[in-house]
Amino acid sequence: TELDQLYVHESVENVIPRDAFVDAFDEVSIPAELVGDGREYDASDAVATYAPRPEFLDAGWVHCIRAGYDEFDTDAYDAAGVALTNSSGIHGSTVGELALTFMLSLARLGHRYRDHQNERNWWEPPYDRPFTIENERVCVVGLGTIGEAIATRCDALGMDVVGVRRSDEPVPGVSELFDPDRLHDAIENARFVVLTVPHTPETEGLLSDEEFAAMRDDASVINVARGPVVDEEALVAAIRNDRIAGAGLDVFETEPLPDDSPLWDLDEVIISPHKGSATNRYHLDIADLVVENVRRYQSGDILKNRVA
Ligand code: NAD
Image (cartoon, rainbow, N blue to C red; front, side, top):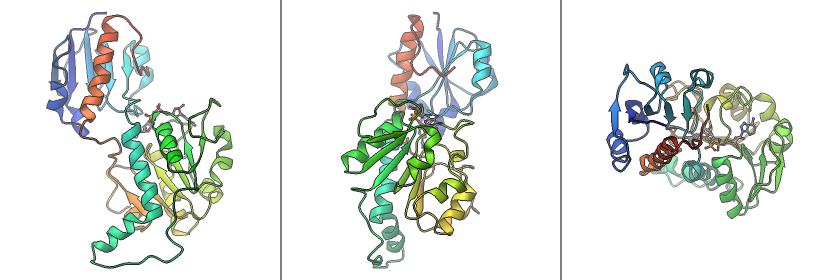
């Protein structure tokens, strides 16, 4: 199929350096050009973008450089017959290692030591506070690219890994799989509940009051998926009331996290600014995906990661 031009929308700058990203297409058979809003497109154009724009529906194919494409109206893409692809498949190591950072810190207290270091304080934790993640149970909710990467890493560190998945196909390192409607059974014995599902109508508010009540009181929530998957107000209440122990959060209902959020003040909550996928070679990983799809598009093959 005809493809004349690859446009890189400036919103990619949210997560990658835009010029380096455009340069990554030097070897590709079609020219790449940086664009802003309001451009006109036709069916022979491809667009790589972070954010959706109405005019993209006139292009032939749109690539969302994020894995989570919940801000894109997939029905509109289907109706317009425009292919939409995402960047799923490249975030296993990056987001996976951040999830492990949260778990290891909550167990070994890296966050607390740094808090006290800031005060030049030789703080010694209470005897019963530190623990090892080895031999602890982790429940990974959503076993796609990121969930599987976390499961493998947790297994390698000697954890007991269980998971929530819609299919019962076995996953390496996961000792037991639960269907989504058995979420409470899956999380009730876990020291860590890790969220790696997309934000969809089914997963919105997946963890709320009832789930926090079902969890162990020494359990922590790790959210590297999307903010709305957790009921944030319920999470704050659960931690304040010692119904659960803490959380590692990369994503929030409102981003950037508002200055008045109570989450900022909780000792056992670790906050990162939605940078789970950040790495110095992120633009190259995304470009590899786009280049592969340019090749497929031109030879009429099925696009990789097509979501609409
Ligand atoms: P993926 O598509 O490979 O995996 C998602 C998995 O969740 C799939 O296996 C899917 O079947 C499963 N799933 C969907 N609904 C479910 C449900 N109701 N119950 C159980 N499982 C369900 O995507 P991925 O690359 O692993 O990314 C997962 C999500 O993580 C993305 O949708 C995105 O929102 C988020 N993400 C966050 C960051 C970050 O910076 N923190 C980076 C990349 C992705």
